[in-house]
Length: 262
Image (cartoon, rainbow, N blue to C red):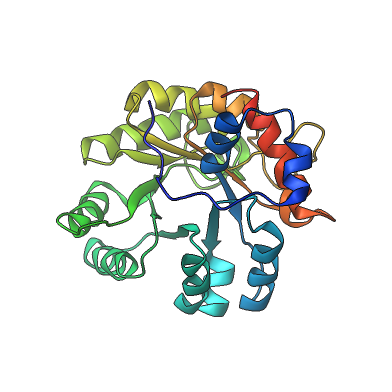
């Protein structure tokens, strides 16, 4: 069994209840604990408006480079006060000492997961892991393998003579050797990484598109149920929810898809 966050779930909204009326309560709660909504918006006000619309439907939010650069750490406080779990996705990639310091700074913010780039190398990954050792209640460290926007042509353009799946495998094995047990990869590689990490590994999967949705700039995608069946721990979903006319209803529909695989 993959370890999940134990945050107390907020009660669902009426829209979510309507979309999920056929889903057993226990399965519904499991799905909510495994869906991360990406708050990829340009400012604090937009983030909080979106969080208001999703209150009671979604437990996890991802704060990435766009929002964190615009609003800073202060944007995290109201989300944490409401009882939400936060995935801070800043993808650190620098010399080991700098990344270690950044990881310690993030740990002080009270977030639940954070990212570094696996391509930063074994010394950087070890420094990031060591920075969290001994910190009570510290965040889960995730190593980002290959971005879901990169296909074989993009991989080749940066000088790598291997397929995306082969690069993901190489980076994951390197991370495991340095004590990393959490990874971000596309849905296409999640089955391979689940075999590498075993049931205790934490695999956070972006590139999720509900049935019938456009893939946009994502190259390596899957449906919610498909990714879970391959071994995903958490799913990250942005535009299919945040750009929807009714974000809560869109999130509830994705939760219902997830429930098919739980």
